[in-house]
Image 1 (cartoon, protein in one colour):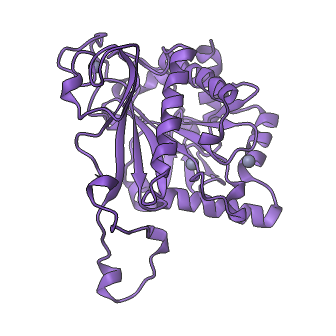
Image 2 (spheres, helix red, strand yellow):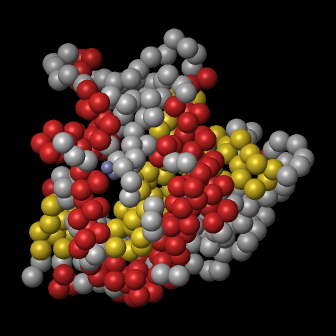
Length: 354
Ligand SMILES: [Zn+2]
Ligand SMILES: [Zn+2]
Ligand SMILES: [Zn+2]
């Protein structure tokens, strides 16, 4: 019988359609089998040798040679088609920090038609020289470099007084919205705290107000005891298939020790995350020949540490694009997931673990 589940972390509902339980092989249509991707694509703007095809780099690690030349291991460049205008292009008199959730409702035009310049930052982290690189095939050292670079840029973007929230994400595959095949992360600096994060913070505050505890700490403790939905686990991190997963094979990667911010990781924790993320993605790549997904890191601004926000607990969501957002999802915000998370965790356990 289908089961209705409520996600305590987000306040959303999912119908787990257990009788239509789907395993990786049942998703053939969603796994568009691509032709073998080459290690180097002469036409790709992110491949070594094509550095002139991107805007000038913001940051790079390279053995030798000039900026914007070859011999790099990782590069950060502005997005060629940015969603937000760079702060330095608009001058210092710009000011806007209102988030959608903070808007007072009124009949005034200023409320009905609120708008502002989309000012912030939009960067691309070209994470590998290999056109066919994947998160599941990187060595731990390579993944450490990727995470370190993300952390560094994340901190730099928060230095701007116009940036109120930095969203790190990775779109992968055609269904994940990736316009370029070459592996890359994106970082967007927004001039407000976005609704998704605002809603999470409210739930953390509500739970903390009632219990004095962190909702995520309690959730992962309970999940560790139950041991039904664990995709991977180490001393430092846990990867869960959430109880009310909205997406088939969704995972949630969380530090096991309470930690408010992604950038608070020390070098040992960062290395552990590198190792564990590679393991989770190696699992995905074993299970699916080609998987589109979105990865997002949710973390509070490092500077905003009021007592109320101190109970936030940073985490990574991985949303595979296997099931489609259709009428019920769009119309009611209620999700149908044909893969019980217990089954997904079992598949990671059987095939994914290295
Ligand atoms: Zn490439
Ligand atoms: Zn916590
Ligand atoms: Zn989240």
